Length: 324
Ligand code: UFG
Image (cartoon, rainbow, N blue to C red; front, side, top):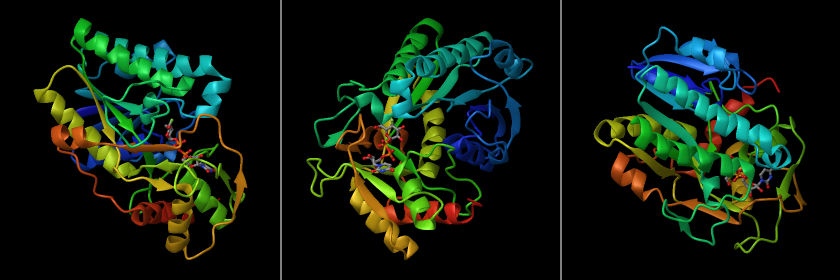
């Protein structure tokens, strides 16, 4: 198979490219390198293109016959999406439309789309299944939900087969630490914890200790980036027998609080995590834990990385190997 990995220089996209290559597939990475890294493109040819730049997108498709597209290009910072919504709707909705139109023109009929648990907004509590109401509370989540809606319409109008994968909290790095999470503006908990331990970042700020959770801090479902990549491969297989537009949650089904993540990171690193209590961060739901029963039953997906400490340990190996 020849696969186009849009956003393949980024965190999850680069793990996808690696997995596809390990399965013997030909990989082309499309990335504008605005947040991705050229050095993360190790398993396929890099085409520098921007989904908002139509000539560059057309050039990426010209003369190629892609069997499938994996779409990871997106802006993904919640706070930034609230401050600059037009940029988010442009990149995540218009950019997706441009990509879909290029696929249609070039006869590419299968897509696996990087969606997000943020389509659910602020779930009341408990495990979130795919039939939970979708009520995003910020432009980032709304942009992902809109893209999913477009995929459903594209299935009817143009016969595009797609799977949207709603990630909960992506975490970790490859076991050999050759690629990992590296954002110029890091907002995610586990990298910030590890940077605080290494002294390459400030003391961790815990965003709110007064939530209605057992220890007062927010609870999330951390899922390893390699398990996410694996689900994309299985989603593509699923489309062979199940045309149409589908959506699946991807998570481990276990929630950990910010304080539990800090405690696990102390065990893994053997060091104390410096932290300060800070006010709540806008838009954070108290608890977000996936029911991934549908992905397990229909895709046959089952995460290999189920322990929080093992996930943090893989991220720790990557962070320690970086020059920062
Ligand atoms: N947190 C801190 N300090 C930090 C970073 C995070 O206390 O420095 C807390 C957050 O407040 C939250 C938890 O750690 O309670 C997890 O935060 P992350 O930023 O790591 O992840 P989010 O749950 O906010 O975000 C993830 C994805 C987003 C997606 C969102 C859906 O990264 O892309 O889930 O809710 F939009």
